[in-house]
Image 1 (tube, rainbow over the protein chains, first blue to last red):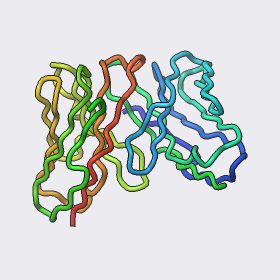
Image 2 (image 1 turned 90 degrees about the vertical axis):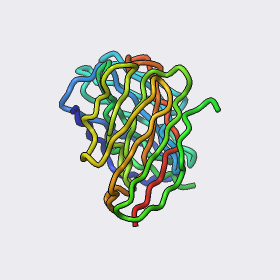
Image 3 (image 1 turned 135 degrees about the vertical axis):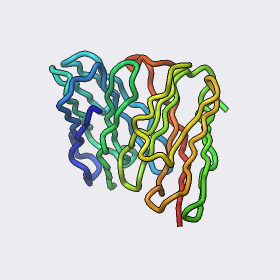
Length: 110
Length: 116
């Protein structure tokens, strides 16, 4: 089993602030995904990164995959209350089940 | 519906009883996953079905847990002799195929199990 460590576990910030959350592993992944989960719902995919060093942007969210494909970061610029949720990273190998980290719980207050 | 459907959405049971949770994946999706999420925690992998291949059961926590899938359709997760520690949200997800690089997981809303 490939373990993914996410940090910080909890983050509470005010609207307008920037933040970065991290996903680290000792294993190499062929791909890594980020999901966001809101209370009472299942996780929803935000992005998939495949290539070492890859950077993807989704509006105010910037995702980076480490050069060695063992870690990833998610940066949010000018956070908004609608960004509140549990951010989960998940990695795996083709043909095998996806392993999830424990997540970063983000609270953005107005 | 177009999404992954799970039932029941909520289940309260007494310790020692058996429960059965159902998942209807998106039509045409060959991969199906079950995960468990305890309160405030991340997702714990339970079992993975891919087409007609033998399922990956490596995440099942004990022999009280079992799951079946009929072809590439409905799956049921059965928990026998439930314990309080089994209380959690059980999430089902489906994916178009085994290639994780191209297949995102589509999750249902989960079945919340409470064991008294």
